[in-house]
Length: 321
Image (cartoon, rainbow, N blue to C red; front, side, top):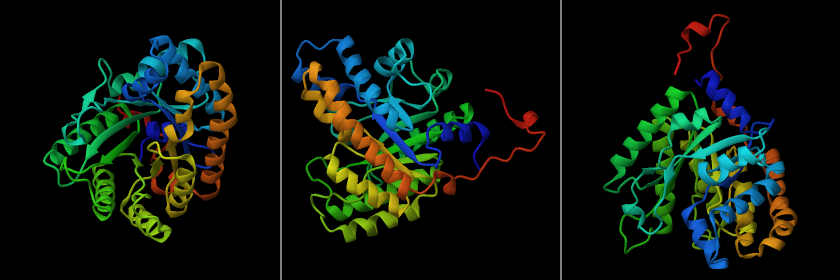
């Protein structure tokens, strides 16, 4: 059973039909590196401007925006380009992409927390954890998730948990079957731990397994182990591939998508003068198309969320922060 606060926040980040069509632009270090390649003189102002351009062009077709506190939330609120009508999700972690996933430790954004995410008016917390059920650090990653879940309970805000699977062996990638098994096992684990929404990888690597029959079977298995609503992340794959995966995921039971680079990554290498046109004529129609897919095929998240129990005398039992 969810709480009144979480129910309110979830509704604020979803469409009227109960689907998530969320724009992700919380990228920092990896996005900065890519933008610097295209513009070596990149400044904090230029980095913020990229996020502003993406959000301004795509927000009309999103149910919520996932963005970071430094270059997204603060300037977006101050300057008015982060729409107050949309749900706002904020990341909790910093990711060191120079390290192999087995050595990436959870590091909170400096001077940032679940409480501050709640206080700034966000409707959700996003936590990314690199995870493999057989890795040595799997118990540590589960403990981190448990702590953040407790914090989100305390502040009455939903947790969107993103488990990213990897091979525990640095020299040996996961086989297609091992990848599928790890994605599904991760979903089962974090669903049981108490995440409110799961942000999941597609459970089949399209390059290795092109058979859509296997895609559908894996998606059905993923949906079966998710006791909570789940969404599909884009992971930077080509838009046309992600669009197909999004449709199949929604048909299998996903409650929508949380998409980033599949929508806007080409804009990184486009000069500023031409960027807005690309975002408006290519990226925005992509998100509009995904929104239509979610509206027609996704499962409303409310089907996996028990409504809050609140009778006329609920206030004395609703704890304070």
